[in-house]
Length: 371
Image (cartoon, rainbow, N blue to C red; front, side):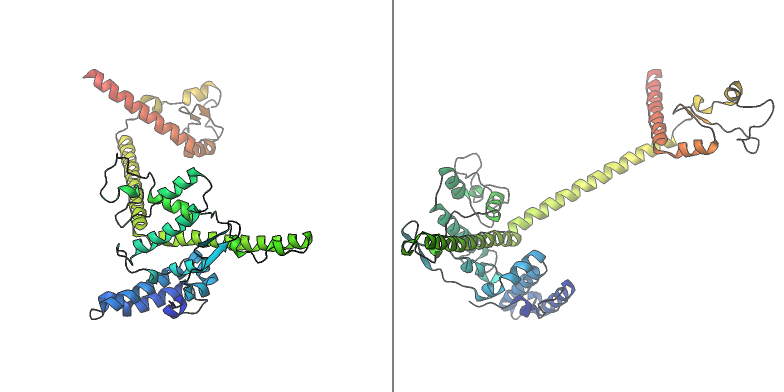
């Protein structure tokens, strides 16, 4: 089934920027939104879904790059799956082609997010089940087989972090669960690597080689074709899994819940910080200056010869004595400027706060003892 180009659907050029895309989307949404088409809800819903899909794809840099690189294949929407004889195993097996996967990169490949036969969950559950079965045909170990068999796309009521086997009314604690979650499902397919050799794409039969040199050239060309097809297939499956996850309502709900929880934690952190600051402000407002903070250091300065006989020190202005010692930090200063800078320092302010808190605690303890 042919599909409409996203650029044509939005009515923008291939080099349109984010502003152009947003304007086009809003303009078309005013026309095709189901709420504005009461007499034609079904068609409007379908068209609006395609418009929304086009905008979401083109406004995402990674998805837009993928779409641009594979645009022709996606528009062609190949439905056919060709049977290839796998030469290295001597069997004839039908495998999903990379081109056939392209048609699933579109909202037109399913109808709605219900669990109907043509709905989102049924379509992609069947698709990934087929991809899984193809990999199982190339079995290499029982442990890998168990991992693949446990992968489950689930249904509309499956939780992102819940075992998909329990999503349909089963109770945890039984032995019917797979132990695999929807998160595990997406983690596997977004980092997928195929077991298939793609030997059916070999261009040359090595038995037809005339000599050893020709045989080596044939092997080199066959290997190049296999590796190219393998890389393209892996990349397509990984991108498809990412594309499906982004549109999966269960994943959207999970992300929304995590964002809500993160917001609540941030609000709680801000609330606690505000309470701590309020408590600190209250302590400061009720703080009583201690006697040791009002010590007159004039005698100390005179004792050490820092004051002359009845002469005013050149460091003192307006006849007032400036203390050049910080008792709480146990530091002395040569000039008033040095002392002023020290009193503004973070280290000094921190020591003062700690001292005040300690004195408040002592006062409270003494008050309790007196009672």
